[in-house]
Length: 276
Image (cartoon, rainbow, N blue to C red; front, top):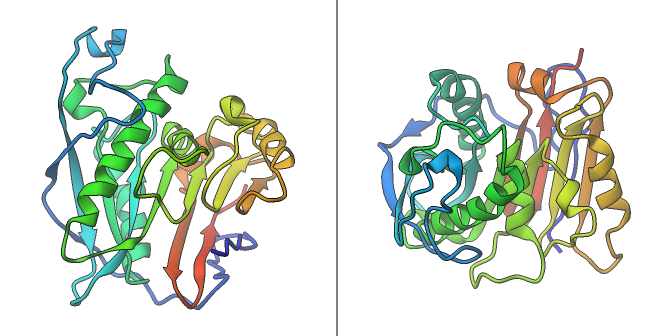
C-alpha cells in the first residue's frame, strides 16, 4: 500500500519521513499551455453561476503552467490547485506556487499548476458556491492529469494532487470513492480544506489533510470527524491539526509538503510550518 507519513512540524525545519532533502533550486517554469477540459462530474465547462456572469460553454481549455526538473527521463508529477482567490495576484506565484515547485523539483518531481478561474472570467469564489466549485474543479484536476499522462516527460503512473483552501476541498472531491475516472491519482494532500461536505466521505487513494485549530473559515473539527468516520478498510487518511494556526497565517507562511511516490518509498509526505 502507498504509505503516507505526516512529519512532525516544529518551527521552520523540514522533517522528511522518507529521505533527506537537498536544498531546493529554482524550478524551471514553462509557459502556460492550454489543456483541453474533460467533463466527468460536470457536463459543461461553465456552471453558469453568478460569478461567471451566468454564461455557459460546452467546451473549454485550462491554462496549466509546468515546472519540471531539467534532467532526462520521466518524472512523477503533482497537480497543484489554487485557493478560492485564484492565481491573478503575483504574490500567489512568488509566495505559494514557486516555493512548492522548488521543493518538488529538489525531489525530482514536476508540478502542474492549474488555473481554474482565468478561462471562466472568475475573480474569486470565496464568497459563495464553494462546495459546487470544488466538484467542478475536480474535473479541472483530472483534465490536467489526463494531459500530463500524454507527455513524454511524465511518469503517468505517479501523479498526485495537492490543493489549498478551495483547492484542498477540490482534492477531497477528486478522491471521493467510488472512483469515476479511469486514471486515478496515487495520493492527495489537502491544505486547510472545508471538510463539511465530506464528513462521511471515503477516498480511493491515500490522503493527508493539514489544517489549523484556529481556522474559523474551514474548521478543523469537520476534518477530524471525517478521519474518525473512515472505515478501517479504506486507504490511509491522516489529519494533522496545528495548534493555534489558521488559514490566514498559512497564507503568510505557507504550508509546504512534498511527495515521493517512488516504488521503493511509496508516497511519502513531509511538511513545513512556522507556528506562532
